[in-house]
Image (cartoon, rainbow, N blue to C red; front, side, top):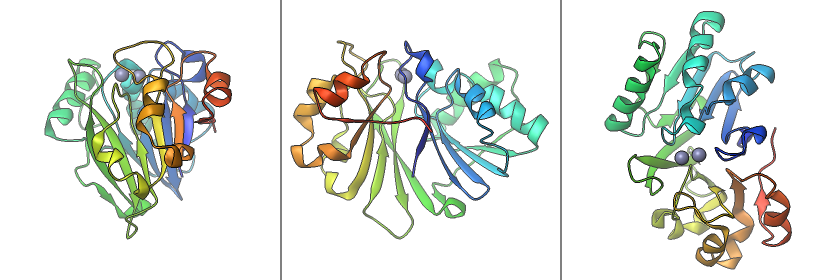
Length: 231
Ligand SMILES: [Zn+2]
Ligand SMILES: [Zn+2]
Protein backbone atom coordinates (compact mmCIF):
# COMPACT_ATOMS: atom_id res chain seq x y z
CA UNK A 1 0.00 0.00 0.00
CA UNK A 2 2.62 2.57 1.04
CA UNK A 3 5.35 3.63 -1.35
CA UNK A 4 8.45 5.42 -0.17
CA UNK A 5 9.97 8.68 -1.39
CA UNK A 6 12.84 8.53 1.09
CA UNK A 7 14.10 6.13 3.75
CA UNK A 8 17.02 7.92 5.37
CA UNK A 9 17.52 9.39 8.82
CA UNK A 10 18.38 13.06 9.26
CA UNK A 11 22.11 12.35 8.74
CA UNK A 12 21.45 10.32 5.61
CA UNK A 13 20.00 12.84 3.16
CA UNK A 14 21.19 11.03 0.03
CA UNK A 15 18.55 8.32 0.56
CA UNK A 16 15.89 11.01 1.06
CA UNK A 17 14.41 11.79 4.45
CA UNK A 18 11.88 9.14 5.39
CA UNK A 19 8.51 9.77 3.76
CA UNK A 20 5.79 7.57 2.33
CA UNK A 21 2.65 7.99 0.26
CA UNK A 22 -0.51 6.17 -0.75
CA UNK A 23 -2.34 7.14 -3.89
CA UNK A 24 -5.83 6.12 -4.93
CA UNK A 25 -6.91 7.52 -8.28
CA UNK A 26 -6.53 11.31 -7.93
CA UNK A 27 -6.29 11.34 -4.11
CA UNK A 28 -2.97 11.33 -2.31
CA UNK A 29 -1.99 10.68 1.30
CA UNK A 30 1.53 11.77 2.26
CA UNK A 31 3.26 10.88 5.51
CA UNK A 32 5.94 13.42 6.42
CA UNK A 33 7.46 15.97 4.10
CA UNK A 34 11.08 16.42 5.23
CA UNK A 35 13.57 18.90 3.83
CA UNK A 36 14.38 17.10 0.58
CA UNK A 37 11.01 15.46 -0.04
CA UNK A 38 9.26 18.18 -2.04
CA UNK A 39 12.08 17.91 -4.60
CA UNK A 40 11.43 14.16 -4.91
CA UNK A 41 7.66 14.65 -5.21
CA UNK A 42 8.34 17.16 -7.98
CA UNK A 43 10.94 15.02 -9.79
CA UNK A 44 8.69 11.94 -9.72
CA UNK A 45 5.62 13.87 -10.92
CA UNK A 46 3.67 12.47 -7.97
CA UNK A 47 1.21 15.37 -8.08
CA UNK A 48 0.52 15.24 -11.81
CA UNK A 49 -2.94 13.68 -11.66
CA UNK A 50 -3.75 14.57 -8.03
CA UNK A 51 -6.71 16.78 -7.12
CA UNK A 52 -6.77 16.27 -3.35
CA UNK A 53 -3.72 15.96 -1.13
CA UNK A 54 -3.83 14.81 2.53
CA UNK A 55 -0.77 15.16 4.74
CA UNK A 56 0.11 13.57 8.05
CA UNK A 57 3.11 14.83 10.03
CA UNK A 58 4.54 12.42 12.61
CA UNK A 59 6.48 15.19 14.37
CA UNK A 60 8.06 18.53 13.66
CA UNK A 61 11.76 17.73 13.23
CA UNK A 62 13.12 19.20 10.00
CA UNK A 63 13.61 15.81 8.34
CA UNK A 64 9.82 15.28 8.68
CA UNK A 65 8.31 18.71 8.04
CA UNK A 66 11.11 20.71 6.38
CA UNK A 67 9.59 21.08 2.89
CA UNK A 68 5.90 21.22 3.85
CA UNK A 69 5.84 24.92 3.10
CA UNK A 70 7.36 24.38 -0.40
CA UNK A 71 4.74 21.72 -1.08
CA UNK A 72 1.84 23.92 0.05
CA UNK A 73 2.99 26.86 -2.06
CA UNK A 74 3.50 24.68 -5.12
CA UNK A 75 0.09 23.01 -4.73
CA UNK A 76 -1.75 26.26 -4.06
CA UNK A 77 -0.16 28.56 -6.62
CA UNK A 78 1.13 26.27 -9.38
CA UNK A 79 -1.14 23.22 -9.32
CA UNK A 80 -4.34 24.64 -7.71
CA UNK A 81 -4.60 21.49 -5.57
CA UNK A 82 -6.22 21.38 -2.13
CA UNK A 83 -3.72 20.59 0.60
CA UNK A 84 -5.32 19.15 3.73
CA UNK A 85 -3.13 18.64 6.78
CA UNK A 86 -4.56 16.05 9.17
CA UNK A 87 -3.27 16.98 12.62
CA UNK A 88 -2.95 14.39 15.38
CA UNK A 89 -4.77 16.74 17.77
CA UNK A 90 -5.33 20.40 18.53
CA UNK A 91 -1.90 20.89 20.03
CA UNK A 92 -0.11 19.49 16.97
CA UNK A 93 -2.34 21.68 14.76
CA UNK A 94 -1.11 24.75 16.67
CA UNK A 95 2.50 23.62 16.39
CA UNK A 96 2.30 23.08 12.61
CA UNK A 97 0.42 26.35 12.09
CA UNK A 98 3.12 28.30 13.96
CA UNK A 99 5.91 26.71 11.92
CA UNK A 100 4.09 27.52 8.67
CA UNK A 101 3.32 31.08 9.79
CA UNK A 102 7.00 31.63 10.52
CA UNK A 103 7.69 30.59 6.92
CA UNK A 104 5.05 33.05 5.65
CA UNK A 105 2.74 30.22 4.65
CA UNK A 106 -0.67 31.52 5.54
CA UNK A 107 -3.72 29.48 6.36
CA UNK A 108 -5.77 30.29 3.29
CA UNK A 109 -3.13 28.40 1.29
CA UNK A 110 -3.95 25.08 3.01
CA UNK A 111 -6.56 23.54 5.34
CA UNK A 112 -6.56 21.52 8.51
CA UNK A 113 -8.73 18.47 8.00
CA UNK A 114 -10.03 17.01 11.24
CA UNK A 115 -11.53 13.74 10.13
CA UNK A 116 -9.58 10.53 10.55
CA UNK A 117 -11.88 8.61 8.23
CA UNK A 118 -10.88 9.15 4.64
CA UNK A 119 -13.61 7.51 2.59
CA UNK A 120 -12.08 9.07 -0.52
CA UNK A 121 -9.01 6.85 0.06
CA UNK A 122 -10.99 3.98 1.64
CA UNK A 123 -8.88 4.15 4.81
CA UNK A 124 -8.97 5.43 8.33
CA UNK A 125 -5.97 6.69 10.25
CA UNK A 126 -5.26 6.73 13.94
CA UNK A 127 -2.41 8.54 15.69
CA UNK A 128 -0.46 6.80 18.43
CA UNK A 129 1.61 8.97 20.80
CA UNK A 130 5.24 7.82 20.75
CA UNK A 131 8.46 8.43 22.66
CA UNK A 132 11.13 10.11 20.57
CA UNK A 133 12.52 13.44 21.68
CA UNK A 134 11.68 14.83 25.10
CA UNK A 135 10.92 18.38 24.05
CA UNK A 136 8.35 17.55 21.38
CA UNK A 137 5.25 15.47 20.75
CA UNK A 138 5.54 12.69 18.21
CA UNK A 139 3.11 10.18 16.79
CA UNK A 140 3.01 6.94 14.88
CA UNK A 141 0.18 6.30 12.43
CA UNK A 142 -2.08 3.27 12.14
CA UNK A 143 -3.66 2.91 8.71
CA UNK A 144 -6.69 0.66 8.36
CA UNK A 145 -8.74 -0.14 5.31
CA UNK A 146 -12.37 0.72 5.96
CA UNK A 147 -14.41 -2.28 7.16
CA UNK A 148 -11.28 -4.33 7.83
CA UNK A 149 -10.00 -4.39 11.39
CA UNK A 150 -7.09 -6.66 10.46
CA UNK A 151 -4.37 -6.19 7.83
CA UNK A 152 -3.42 -2.90 9.45
CA UNK A 153 -0.31 -0.92 8.71
CA UNK A 154 1.71 0.89 11.34
CA UNK A 155 4.18 3.66 10.55
CA UNK A 156 6.21 4.52 13.61
CA UNK A 157 7.64 7.89 12.69
CA UNK A 158 10.73 8.35 14.87
CA UNK A 159 10.68 6.29 18.05
CA UNK A 160 13.03 5.66 20.95
CA UNK A 161 10.86 2.79 22.22
CA UNK A 162 8.26 0.65 20.49
CA UNK A 163 4.66 1.62 21.43
CA UNK A 164 2.92 -0.91 23.68
CA UNK A 165 -0.41 -0.21 22.00
CA UNK A 166 0.93 -1.86 18.84
CA UNK A 167 2.83 -4.66 20.59
CA UNK A 168 -0.31 -6.02 22.23
CA UNK A 169 -2.09 -6.37 18.90
CA UNK A 170 0.72 -7.41 16.55
CA UNK A 171 -1.48 -10.12 15.02
CA UNK A 172 -3.72 -7.40 13.55
CA UNK A 173 -0.87 -5.88 11.53
CA UNK A 174 0.18 -6.78 8.03
CA UNK A 175 3.19 -4.45 7.87
CA UNK A 176 5.05 -2.35 10.39
CA UNK A 177 7.33 0.34 9.09
CA UNK A 178 9.75 1.30 11.81
CA UNK A 179 12.57 3.68 12.54
CA UNK A 180 15.69 1.71 13.46
CA UNK A 181 19.22 2.67 14.45
CA UNK A 182 22.49 0.78 14.54
CA UNK A 183 24.29 3.49 16.46
CA UNK A 184 23.50 4.22 20.09
CA UNK A 185 21.14 7.17 19.99
CA UNK A 186 18.58 7.92 22.73
CA UNK A 187 16.09 9.30 20.18
CA UNK A 188 15.89 6.17 18.01
CA UNK A 189 15.23 2.52 18.75
CA UNK A 190 18.31 0.33 18.46
CA UNK A 191 18.01 -2.69 16.20
CA UNK A 192 19.05 -5.06 19.02
CA UNK A 193 16.23 -3.70 21.23
CA UNK A 194 13.74 -4.04 18.38
CA UNK A 195 14.78 -7.67 17.88
CA UNK A 196 14.21 -8.37 21.58
CA UNK A 197 10.76 -6.74 21.66
CA UNK A 198 9.16 -8.17 18.51
CA UNK A 199 8.37 -11.89 18.79
CA UNK A 200 10.05 -14.01 16.14
CA UNK A 201 6.82 -14.95 14.40
CA UNK A 202 6.09 -11.28 13.68
CA UNK A 203 9.56 -10.19 12.52
CA UNK A 204 8.67 -10.74 8.84
CA UNK A 205 6.19 -7.83 9.14
CA UNK A 206 8.91 -5.39 10.16
CA UNK A 207 10.21 -3.03 7.47
CA UNK A 208 13.11 -0.80 8.52
CA UNK A 209 13.06 2.86 7.55
CA UNK A 210 14.78 6.07 8.72
CA UNK A 211 18.03 4.13 8.27
CA UNK A 212 21.56 5.40 8.77
CA UNK A 213 24.06 5.58 5.91
CA UNK A 214 25.35 2.21 4.62
CA UNK A 215 23.28 0.10 7.01
CA UNK A 216 20.93 -1.70 4.59
CA UNK A 217 23.20 -4.74 4.12
CA UNK A 218 23.76 -5.20 7.84
CA UNK A 219 20.04 -4.96 8.62
CA UNK A 220 19.29 -7.52 5.93
CA UNK A 221 22.22 -9.92 6.33
CA UNK A 222 22.88 -9.89 10.06
CA UNK A 223 19.37 -9.29 11.40
CA UNK A 224 17.35 -10.68 8.48
CA UNK A 225 15.04 -7.68 8.54
CA UNK A 226 13.23 -6.14 5.58
CA UNK A 227 14.33 -2.66 4.56
CA UNK A 228 11.93 -0.43 2.63
CA UNK A 229 12.77 0.18 -1.00
CA UNK A 230 12.26 3.52 -2.69
CA UNK A 231 9.60 3.86 -5.33
ZN1 LIG B 1 12.75 13.09 14.75
ZN1 LIG C 1 13.75 11.78 11.73
